[in-house]
Image 1 (cartoon, rainbow over the protein chains, first blue to last red):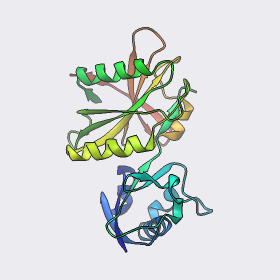
Image 2: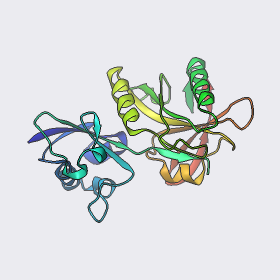
Image 3: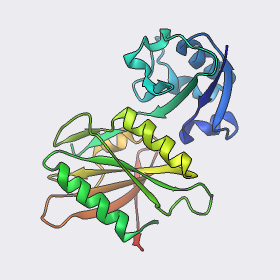
Length: 93
Length: 136
């Protein structure tokens, strides 16, 4: 099914500046694989070499962080919106 | 250079003081326009999931809410603010290693002394460049 994916500014350069792209996918893993395939510049930033969700990225299905759903196996429905945002962290040490 | 209205800077520092002795964090936004991306117009406090005096981990759901709220106002997130509770307002190796976006402004508020000290930086390929804060 076709879903809308909202990209963070740091990834838009790999998608010709687009803030939102559409992909055909049945689950979150397929969304990320499809993005990596269409936009090779994103590949190393979304998934690790072993195919896991990269720790520097958060992926949301509508309002929920997919790490608290079924991660990459999270199933999608028509009209779902996927959002990708960088993980933001740091500190004084 | 980053422009921050004094009302927003006051709100940022007040929020971070309230989180003390833990580090606090949040996001700043600007109007979506190529010539206004250095002018802060919005501030979104976010929970520190790490609940630590030495680390912050910006709550991902708060980030999503801030991103959407900014977009609803035709704004975009342009940077992150966090406090250093016991050290100077200068990016730590952890800050540099975790900097997610080279276009962002990285604002650090030191609460080491009674009066907050705020600085802003750009971080590109691990290089730290301080930028001037213009308070409007």
